[in-house]
Image 1 (cartoon, protein in one colour):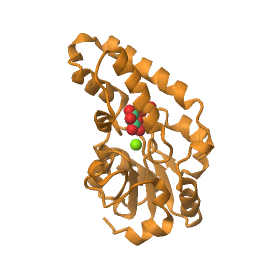
Image 2 (image 1 turned 180 degrees about the vertical axis):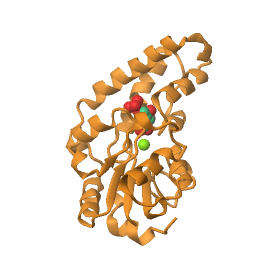
Image 3 (image 1 turned 90 degrees about the vertical axis):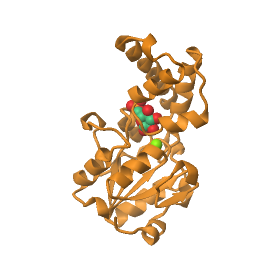
Image 4 (image 1 turned 180 degrees about the horizontal axis):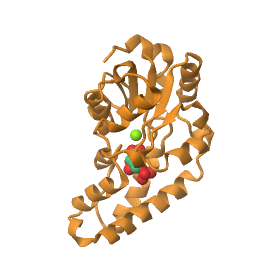
Length: 219
Ligand code: BG6
Ligand code: MG
């Protein structure tokens, strides 16, 4: 195992909850039903794709022009940015800082493969930017998760083969992307939400270098 490629939202910090809340406010304003089960489909996918799914759920896809959709996406992001402005290092999920420290000491590559345009801001708020050898530039990614492109780019940026990498994700679309890249997939969540993962942990507190090394099988 030469590298670990992390998702951000829901793996490094619980900003997945803030995405849920911000979309929930927008859905409520549009009288579109919104719940945690539906929200699972939005994890890992881009802002515009998330909005399209929400509008389709409310049969409102044709009611908004491209400009109108852009305005709705901006409204959601403004609310999301209000929520993440208060993020501090105390919001790092359990076990993550210790894992990053162990990986650095073992000289194992560390990359971030997040679909979020707010990822760099959040890493800085968490004071974790230092640990990452590469943060994949999502604006240069043509195909979002579940396409493997973002994980393959992370491996290429680190100069390692995909088969030498572990990917860690909390989204079904993310697990698909990791497996599509030919990497070992670690899911954070429940097995039903993490289909196709090589191993699933209930919380990040279970993650450590020795735990990952004991399960890792070259892809
Ligand atoms: C992913 C989240 O990390 O980033 C998604 O799982 C989110 O829920 C996506 O939609 C895009 O984030 P942003 O911050 O660019 O709107
Ligand atoms: Mg996530």
